[in-house]
Length: 269
Image (cartoon, rainbow, N blue to C red; front, side, top):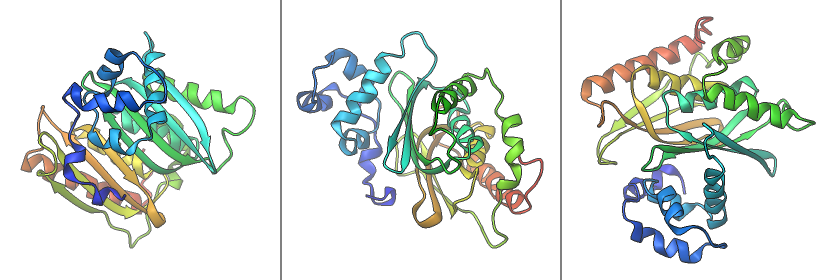
């Protein structure tokens, strides 16, 4: 199902533990019920419905191993692509840092989704192609995860690494961003929908721009069908939906970003 076809109710968070009971009964292995319930509460209902139960268990186990660490990641092949899962407490620029690290390593992002539970614990999932064969041999996979975790925690600066790839970040002269806002889909966030041709580094630049404007990415659903980027970000600011002036300011910044990408602006990153 394309994101544009998803019923609005599935974007709402799970707030009642009784909604999780049938899922608990259907899980392939036994889990600590209170811990599992706390893990799932706050996630969008879409997660419970569209995610295979074995994947939900994997995410729960990953969360349980977090312990006192600030971030934990898992990385595995899925056919010709890779699947990256990140669990960490929410923080500003988190989504941009993950997308930017993938760009630095030359990954082609196919899709992504991100959301947090009721305890501000984030689950981000990215599917990508290792187009430069950077993580397929030796200890390259472990090195990628180490660099990613260091960047997420702010122990390693991302921008100096990305500057070496600035010339890869560009749009064709005919490309335009199509931007729309919707305040009716979700009770506490504004949905930003952005469509354009998919380009290297695009997701990083868009998500960084959103964070620069002081907006929080509460949920994100990214698709790149047929070389097109169809991105949906559910945003909040100052604890609620975006006001009209915040929408206009963000739209202007995003359109300006698109113009700079077409010029291959050296100061873009």
